[in-house]
Length: 219
Image (cartoon, rainbow, N blue to C red; front, side):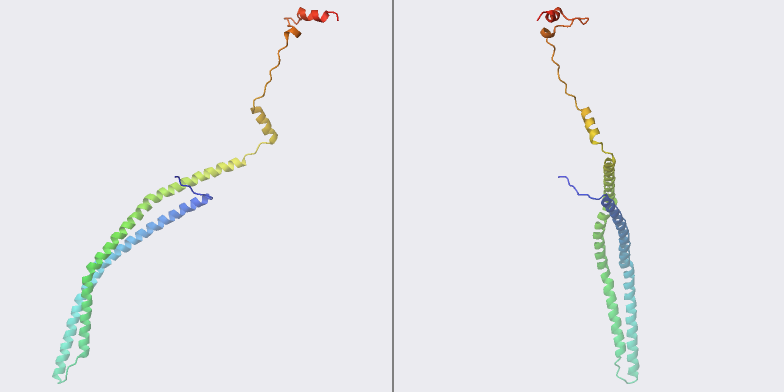
């Protein structure tokens, strides 16, 4: 069944074409920006975070070694002074260093899992993005071409209507005369003269003897 639309303004077709053009430009810009952000995210996880947490693990173990050395030093010094070594501060520093290195190791171990999750999300996003790209570079130009054809056809149609409305209308009498000239005229057959009453006309314009005899006979 053919589809139809109620169009009351040619400008609506132009506005729709302009809106689709703007949407296409914005979609292309958004796709480019999205691709840049996706590459940045992958690079941030695969390189930046990996290097960062690997460094934090190494630096964390260095802090643990430094904190343990400070604790042993404090314990030795206080034993020599015949004091009961509590070393609370040194022990707290060592415990904090151990917690930090534990966190760094957990982050470092979780990076492959998060990288896999991000890559999976990127693949799903790429599928949807591909459909949009195909539409922008394929269907959108065809749609704009059809709208331009519709707009041009409607403008030609409107121009024909304007020309027809500007033509002068013929007067009533003139139209009647023109119509009468076009109509075929009705012809009537004339009756043939009766030879018995009128006689026959001879060549030269003289009447037949029968007509003369009837005219000269006494009454």
